Image 1 (cartoon, rainbow, N blue to C red):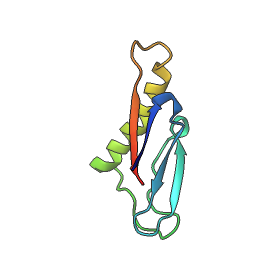
Image 2: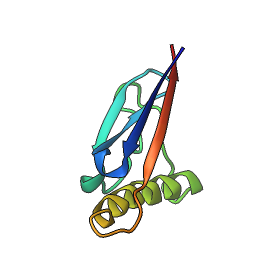
Image 3: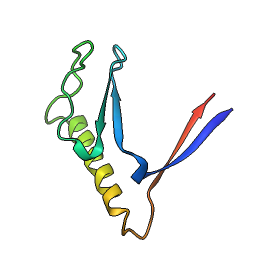
Image 4: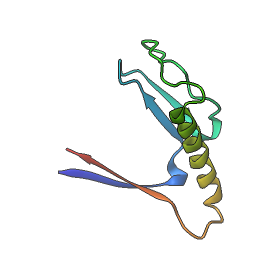
Length: 87
């Protein structure tokens, strides 16, 4: 059995970053995003390397989510995400 949701980009207020080493999480509002935390607040494992491809992609993703939500007011299309989880 699966649960299925469709989420409009305007409904995305924040993104949660979860440490794969210890499970600690940091939630960052897309509108307030400035920098990705470099280290896990729980176990101090390095999360990102400044200037790395991953860090640049995460910055671009957070900026894009914010920009898409802002543009949705006048855009001719809606951007939505399909989320599915198995039960």
